[in-house]
Length: 239
Image (cartoon, rainbow, N blue to C red; front, side, top):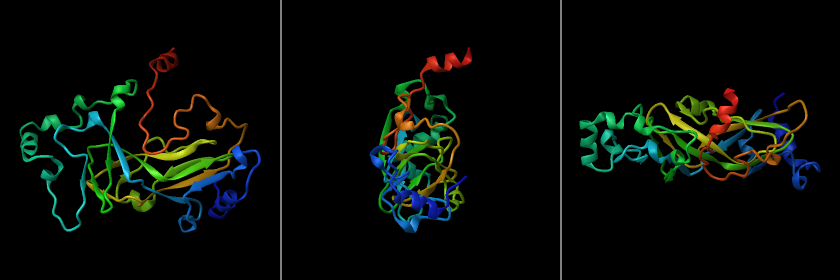
């Protein structure tokens, strides 16, 4: 059963003695009632993006600062003109299907990241790069199941703001990391509305995320890279 907008607001205003510090079931900071919808709350994009270093070809820019009146070309993705010429001479070195750009979920070195800042005027994202972003909002959720999804206007611009990580947990506290991909070169802006958070009731005994020692991401702030998946875990599941 999904909570309505008015019920989300009510749950934010009523303290619950069973929660840590007697907090309400829903905490959203910062909060603006204008962002409260019929059955969700709008979330905004933070200014910092991360990308995995191994996925960016040498000589390429991870983003292009956006200037509304400028006409862009492929040359703008490259640091220098010589890098642009090298791209034309060796296109296979820039093809994301090239295994040189592989990600290994079980290797910590594969998760090394670099930061980029989205300028106030916006940044053009590349369809060839996966970006880790985060919500401006910090949330805490107790006794409910939270999940996020893209706004329809974001989806209609073919911006994907999560792959499989749109589901949260009862007890999750932190900013939400966004796995962002675009279908075309697409402009994003800091603080733009990037998604929505929903809340559902659940059935059964609780196993709060913030009390689970195996949880990787509780309390996360800013874009958070993937935790390494232990090979032992995979091996045990195959037996």
